[in-house]
Image (cartoon, rainbow, N blue to C red; front, side, top):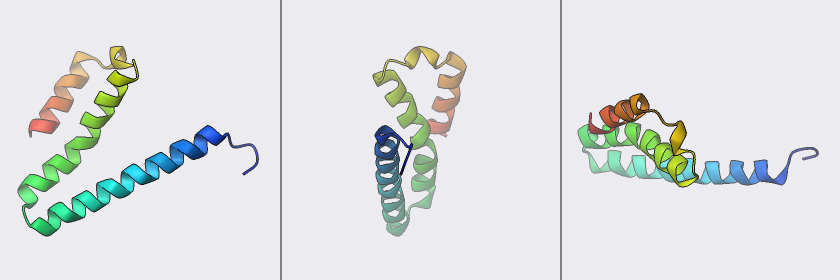
Length: 77
């Protein structure tokens, strides 16, 4: 499209691929039948993934201790 930078399209494509992988993995976990394990992992994995990616990209200093406590609570809950 006109006026939309190529980087935006690349990020959109990567986001779509990651979301597709997420839904495929979630469907597989639900199919396996252990909802008590699959659901909490599925709900907390985006927060953990964003934290890891932010740290890898050098933006980890923006993640406060309070955020880390919340992410840890969600991941272990």
